Amino acid sequence: MYASVEIWILLFFYPANFSQQVVGQEQVLLQRQKRMWVLGNIDITEEDEGPFPKTVLKINNDKTQTQKIIFKLSGNGVDKGLFFLDRTSNTIMVSGKIDREKTPVFAINIHAFSAKTSVEVDQILKYQVKVKDINDNPPVFNQSVYKVEIPENISKGKEFYRVVATDADERNHPNSRISYSLIAQKSSKNFNINHSTGVISCTRCLNYQEEKSYVLVVKARDNGNVILSSTTTVQVNVVAGNNNRPVFKRAGNFLGNVYENDEHVFILRLSITDTDVPHTSAWRAVYKIREGNENGNYKIETDAETNDGILSLVKHLDVEDSPRRHLNITVENEEPLYICSDMINQQILTPDSISVTIIVHDANNPPVIHPL
Image 1 (spheres, one colour):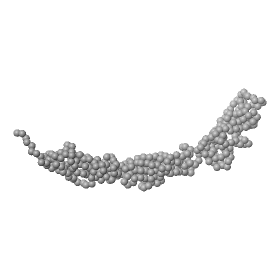
Image 2 (cartoon, helix red, strand yellow):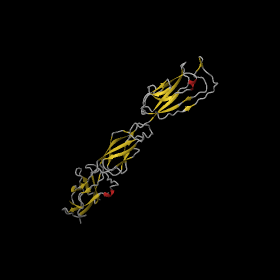
Image 3 (cartoon, rainbow, N blue to C red):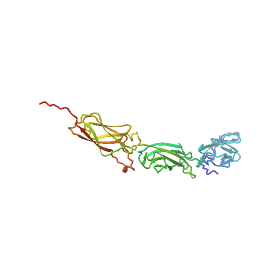
Image 4 (tube, rainbow, N blue to C red):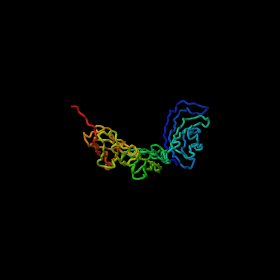
């Protein structure tokens, strides 16, 4: 049986002494007399299994008390045979079950004609048949698999992606109100999802060297009396960042030798280790001479293949100024170092550095004659 019928009633009253229009000896449409007409809404439930045909509404009109009236129906649903009139009982019937997602509202017009003259004898009665929703549609994701790339140095708690599911049931109704949840993660719980919006965020720092990808299974469920749900897969690929600083392979003091007249000569090679992905900006080294190169006598370059630092003398030194020179050299990466808050106590934030002592050897300079 249909769950409910809602009817709005509008009463029209006219003075009994208004003018009349006569066709033959019968008073018809323009006869003014006290009368009642009904305007209403009807609720029926979708996917009702019947049996059919099934009663929707019994038609009543006060003119049937004084004359024989023939009723006719029009409107969407009538023209398709879904709704029809049982003329014996003047009852509107529905012929089969209805899918609300195809047509949520039907408009049915009831026309009243004189059986004798076939003239329409009253206003058109208009009903809206609203199809009440049942929870017959699960939420559906707009993709069966989502592929996402996120940087290794993403901040803890950062939102980075949103999955979207839709539900064809009635809007703003529990049957279509969606809740999201993460029901599976490949390893430890590194991710969280907003239950209302479907936005995914990181719950902890990521480490490309430990885990390069994650597989998340997301569930979307509605909030109907009978809960329906579906799932999707989110493939999260971690893009390597710079969370490992380069470190010199050997600590302590390095020693280099030059002659005071040398220029553009190799002094020594410095080697480092870096566990970030090779040949990326997070791995490529940048060497700097922090102290001892105030006069621009030296330069240091990076070997693109080995990542070593090549220290050279570019401008000659004078042994008489000082036979021993001291340099402080640091190394960083092209990409700035990022240390996650979860790992900051395990990392040294300052660049690694070494000391280099340059021994300047005397050259056999020709004597210089100073005039008296």
